[in-house]
Image (tube, rainbow, N blue to C red; front, side):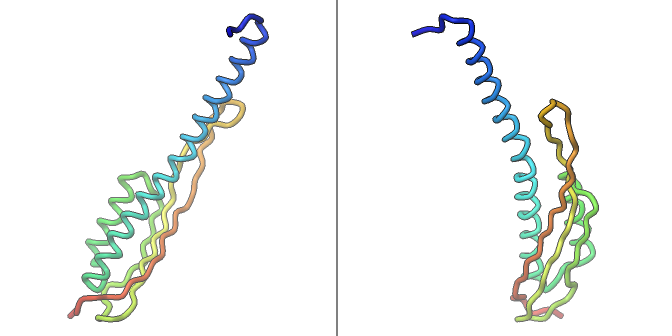
Length: 129
């Protein structure tokens, strides 16, 4: 069965454009999700360093900030202990902004800024000096 009326072609065109639009919007909104997942992965890595070393050194904090900056994060704020004794709880808190672009219904682009916040605690498992 084929399309015989011009109206059927118009409807098919509208449906295809609608599906493509939904696909594009889905991709645009998934990018911040991937950025957030990478943000959490990096922060988890540094939480493991706190667990292992009993805190973060100034170079660890700088490395954490550099890794987040390389992913496009800005306004990075890190609150981390420098020395926690064995068996005590240590908390890492990181906030950072990231920008992403969305397409509005009229076809124009809009820059959105979101703040990612990571806060997690661990128990220090290594004896520190």
